[in-house]
Length: 186
Image (cartoon, rainbow, N blue to C red; front, side):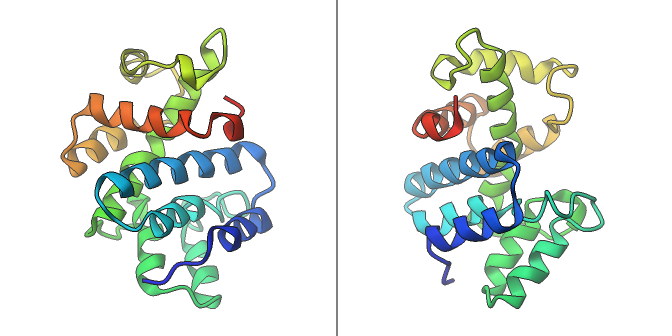
């Protein structure tokens, strides 16, 4: 599967997404995807770009009827490979697109967790991801009132699909996000 360059993907993301928090979420998912690609000896560029673009249409098309379906149409119209489009579609349960590849499973696994790690960092006195620990994320994972929009089941199912312990998975995502903490403002 041929992927666009990171610069091309970033341009596409910024074309459709103006909200800096959504851009930061995409950057966090990209970083987590790159970490896992390296761990699994996969194509870091491809995995990173899939992570970067997974929600590129969300700001413009936030309803479940549209996201990520409109994004898939846009990607197809711009000549993206169908396997790339399928990976984007598979990150959301409501699309009913099966996650058959390790790339697809990883995208699903890191998406919600990146949101939760961000939320945990923002309630730390320092507001720094450097101060986020696995146990803090695990504690907040159990607190349904905290970051209500984060789907806890997706996080648990994602770790299971990767055959990685939840603690290791949380630690991996924290590590990935620490690597780009300046870009994330965390």
